[in-house]
Length: 252
Image (cartoon, rainbow, N blue to C red; front, side, top):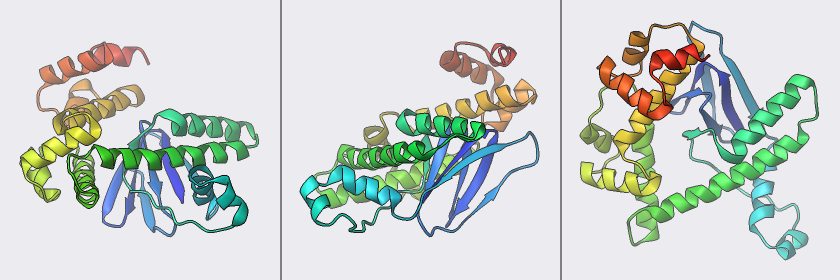
């Protein structure tokens, strides 16, 4: 199992039939034995930071955190099977802090062992959040909630893969095998924001990265992140970051 993160720029990982553009605001968890490839587009330098866990390490952290001591004492080496949905996740909370600390220690030649334990516990928490997301799905039966949650994730993955493209809600819902209203309602329940708000936020975050890390003209940043109007882009950017794109860039 591994965590793929980026310190500067962005890189694309492909796993199975999915592709994931990871930047400094996101990370990706890939499961054990999952084959993948990574591509870095020509342009500004890109710095990645990837953590690989020994087989069974995260599973042991999950078992130690979720089972009673008596079970752990009776069978301390029992193997557990643990898998994660392979999708982009926001860099925040425990995992983000642990990644930053591990990178700092690695650059200084320090011992990063404690970081592996902290990251494993972060993944355990991520696993628990996955269960809470399923619990927020508006459906009575557990099996229905799981299936609906999986389809909502499929729709969100489609939005991530085609973030800069014009993608109407009905098309996203079709990719998730749901009706537009059903997808919209479930997405809002699970993630606490509308699909449109999610896409806009992700586009603005990408725009902010480009403004910080490149000298691409503002109008090109606007178009390259999927916005069609410079005026609306500037308004939305100011609303989120408290400054116009030009003012934001001047701070770097």
